[in-house]
Image 1 (cartoon, rainbow, N blue to C red):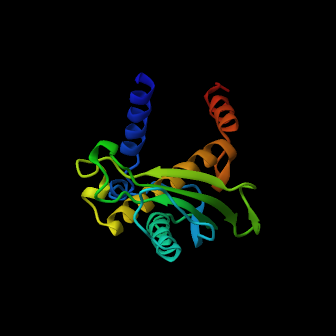
Image 2 (tube, rainbow, N blue to C red):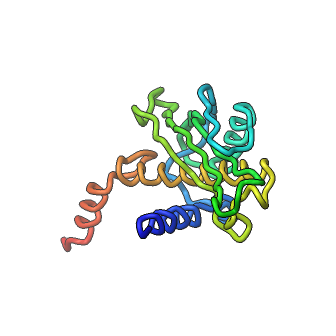
Image 3 (cartoon, helix red, strand yellow):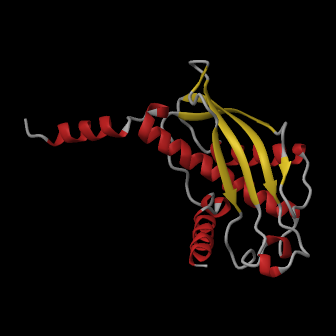
Length: 197
């Protein structure tokens, strides 16, 4: 029972942290030399989860492309990078499911980043990302009761785009993507600058 409560608390906490629509209200923070080239979204093996509303592969690819473009066209770095996304699975909570189950909407997709100048992938293996609907007064009992299918898709895809940005920022910090220095090198450089000459 305690494990179940802990898992539910963690899931709600993660959902609360990832409100992509609210985050878009803030000014964009530079992502190194990143400038969005093109976004390619596919869904060849899309799986609909249990107790889910229907949504076609075309609807998901259109919604995901729009969310990624909305987030990343705010970046104005000096080099083009392309995003390749494969939407893998989803659950769109539906009305009529007992409230005690508190159904939540979720989306799973994979991301690959291409460096246009190098004509090469930055990540050899696609990064898999799972997102939940944003936690709010509307969704506490499950978004199927309070949101249309289109609102749920918008919620999930904007949250997904935010999670892509967070992952890219970690890669910039840890792997030096987009002109960033990997953290150990950056730390050494900072330490060297603080040593008196």
